[in-house]
Image (cartoon, rainbow, N blue to C red; front, top):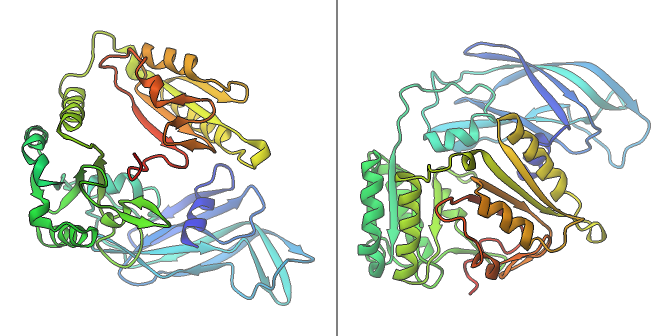
Length: 388
């Protein structure tokens, strides 16, 4: 249910949360709903050792003649806390529809005051802070926060190959540890226990974890027959929110690993600067499937496009409909040079994107050289490194 709350709360135009006044122990908010929402919404979290105390005042509301279900709760409540690093985060939940004095009420807007103990500052890893700072209503940044450690976990056979990457990250200022599977254990549970021990006991604790190899070399967790590395990140508390960042270089052999590491180091150490315009070019790709009820990809990419344009980027788009075969327009955009590619679709396969179509075999025809884009591909089967 928490995922549902978060999805609604961070929607595009569902609601607006404005901070009217804030101190070290209180925060006053104005919450307005722009669309009718039936489900509860987490508007954010309060970081506090104890549950916050709240008071609210309905600004605008309507009486509803009938609802699908009886609502016997107040419009505001504080949920069970989650653990992030050494901090407790209490979700602040708003029920847009509720029952009071035998009347069913629908909220248009309300004012909410929260009182809490809080923390002097929140010293969490910088990478995690970028994710959670907009969700923590009373976030106080610790100016002394510095990067923590980086842990690389590798099969023994890849150990020597991965050392240049570790050396480069050390030169960038990270405290790097390279651990072989002979040290961590070879099962997903053993590897997670190793990461958890490092997180709780090492100084500095790892902020990032890089896993080397595909499923035959280094195991993942399996959820509903699908591989996932997310459980490796949940090492503090019983919630499912990440406590550190994990990534995987899914390679099958030393040659592939050498290629990937060379790209990473060159991208960071010697970026292509003969032409610098590509740093401000991006590409949005999306496919809608109205007949299959997949109608959100294009609106989502238009929203991302707007954000990028507002930050000074040039944005190319390839959308289905109308473009079914995306090979030519996608190839042209990538060859010109783009710094970021964002894809969202409804269908995919291990061989590539369905619509607008662009397949693994099309990658061979690219000639973008060292203008290497960062790609986020959000669709079924993306990242399924258990497949060949």
